[in-house]
Image 1: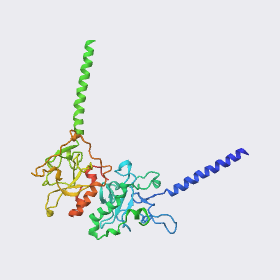
Image 2: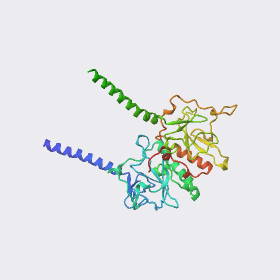
Image 3: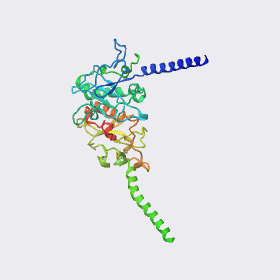
Image 4: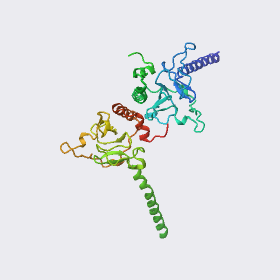
Amino acid sequence: MRMKRLYVTFLAVLSIILGAGIISSAWAQNWQALPPYNILWPLWSPTLSPKSPVTGLPTPLIPELSRNTILPVQPVLAMNPTPTYTGPMGTVFPYLFYNTPTGVVFYDIVYGLNPWPPAKLLDPTTGAPVPLTLPPDYTFLSLPLLKETNLALIELANLTYLLGYGFNLGVNSSSLLTYADIWGLPPI
Amino acid sequence: MFKGKKAVIFLFIFITLISISILLPALVQAQANWAAMPPYNVLWPLWSPALSPGGTPLVTNLTRNTILPVQPALAWDPLQPAGTGVPWALYNTPTAFGGGLLYFDLYYGLNPWPPSYMVDAVSGAPKPITLPLSWSVLLPTALKGLEYYVPLANAVYSYQYGVPLTSLLTSASIWGLPPL
């Protein structure tokens, strides 16, 4: 009788632990790998991944991110979890993507604006995509840190895009997403 | 017995001399991170492959009339009054705007080179910076924590003078990072 009670208690505790784990894992699905380069798209951004009316789950605005993709909003934010450069204490700076008449360009804080994708993601002979090798836990990687150093990133990327392309293309600066838009902050 | 002791001493001295001859040039080379640039003694980064290819500065002096072959260049006063500890970003003024060298400072923005404290108020002659004794071995500027500096300086310069951003060096080029 005592053994049975112990056994039931053990099962109950185990169920609670496993349940909590499953729920937190589901909540922690922050990123989706987007073909053809496996760049990570933010499921946590309500603007870039609005909830599907069918499934109720965050769904990326676009199904892929290639040179010829036309972005419905800009900038979009995506992350390379194994970047060439990392900042203080391992900070990973996300990329910001924009439309240009010659295709998608991406902004990197130390490399500036460049055509997407970088040469590293293309086979030098065939030109075929060489997707990023993602860590097994990539969907659960944490969000870009809401630190002071990252707070200026989107403003600086937007300014660089406007100076490099946007003003010539007639892009209105007010049409570009802000940090608050991307992170889904409440109205000021 | 005496012969053996002599041989050991000789071997010790020989190995020491060989080690010094190998290590000393490497140490001296590794430690020279900056070159003092006339006429103001402002420090030029020897650690930047884009600004000092092969360890040689791209320019021989930094005056109001120096023309930079690439921009921005970095130059540093380790005792600068503003105390930012950050090198200045230097740019050419386009000829349509009168020419001349400009420097970007986080506190003061873009201004004509040099800062007034490096010029004698009466004669206008250069007042070179008094550098610390170990100036050439001061550590290279770390990019970490300064990621926003060059893009910000470039954006300010590009906006003010209409110079294409694509013609300006990025932090990656200045610090010699591998390709993306």
